[in-house]
Length: 313
Figure 1 (spheres, rainbow, N blue to C red):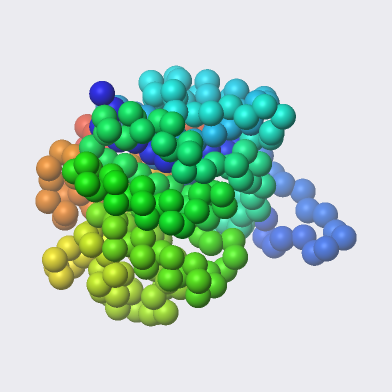
Figure 2: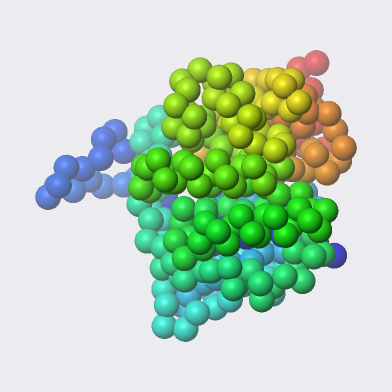
């Protein structure tokens, strides 16, 4: 039985870098690095959880093409349940191009492809996967344009009525967060047990620049735990008006693509182990740092994470 069911965006990531600046229109730059990753938010978090020994199922769709087959084979290697993934004929798998600068900062260009056709019906057809899980995670809300807002509210209501834990990571809104989208997220948050935005998302959602102000406002909207990922500044969480902070670990980061999703996996793993929030944040930060400085596609074990944390003690 899978402990976590992850719903959302599966796509290919094409990562190019490292650029000192992006090309102007009509001009060209040459990349030093090109990587193809079987990813999307769903792919990163699913593989990270599976690598820690957590059984995972996925509900998503893919195109019937080379990239779709690559993603399916990659997920199989991690032992992930892919029965909830629908393959769409004559449709291309979604692609995101991540442009990375010399500081590791990223800009994204996405072609939704098969993600454009994902609806609440795809979830209903795989309801048995949700019934078997303890945690139900929704990723990449804004890359699933046919997954209607009312459908998400109904999904989270039904999931919570079953006694499951709802988890949300919307990702960045390509429409740059119009007020209607912010209102939607506020309503979804009232049905969310764990919300995992990054700092930029938290600031634009709340209109608050100071992280603790944004954290408290999101907590007011939410019905549970809010965690803000702050990159090199670590992570911060609030639960029952209590704030928990953990600084980042210093490592040589090769590329931060997928960092937030890797953190999400480490964080959920810690909660499943029953750790307190200080310990959970410490583990999630270290798990992320080790993955992002490791060889491609490798996730650390729990033992390696704790050895890294206490190496100088």
